[in-house]
Image 1 (cartoon, rainbow, N blue to C red):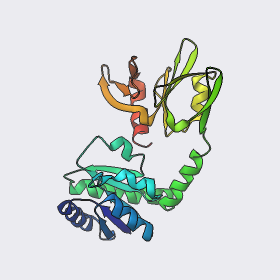
Image 2: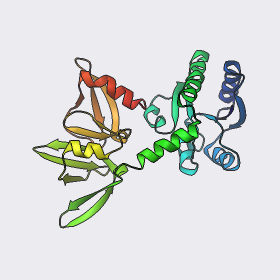
Image 3: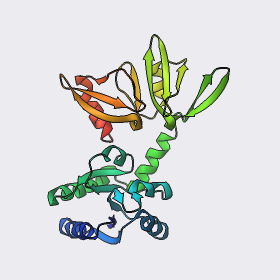
Image 4: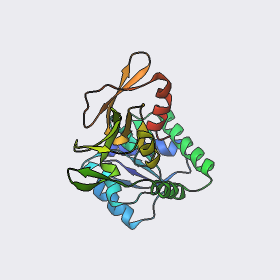
Length: 251
């Protein structure tokens, strides 16, 4: 299997290369790239590798920028010294998130996970991701809302969350603008991609990107901090915690 490493620190890249060779002799690392720019240029000129190992903070920006230029259809194992990017990583083809210094057993487990996923779906990951993209395209892409006497369209990706209050349903966008909708929260939930929006409780339906922080809460519950912020306590019940964690991890 062909793979590439995207890592801007040479010692870290060499250490990872050695660890990969030790973990699986069938993984052929065909390129070691050290920036967003060099990665984009290489991916434009070469066939897509079967697996990518990506650091996140590179010398010319976050590696997530690569996805803005290249349609990456292969899975990614992120290797980073920071823990704050794990949510975003799972939005960018991540099958594992390894924190530096990377332990050999963690790397080997990530490669085994790749093999198991590939065998389970009995198809290459490109086909799998294309199928997911096709399914996602069937969900609602925008909402027509009223502002004063005018109507405007709000793209689904620009919506932070929905909430029910006093028999009304409100929509909050990324700019903290509020709109009132004439649909129930349950009806709206059916129209949205479940990998992007989650029904936190009876009152809230939130976009993954709006979740700024997850905190522990008494009695094994979780509390969410949303962006834009809201004065209410957004609580996930003990019964819903397990399902929520699975959703956050990419289901």
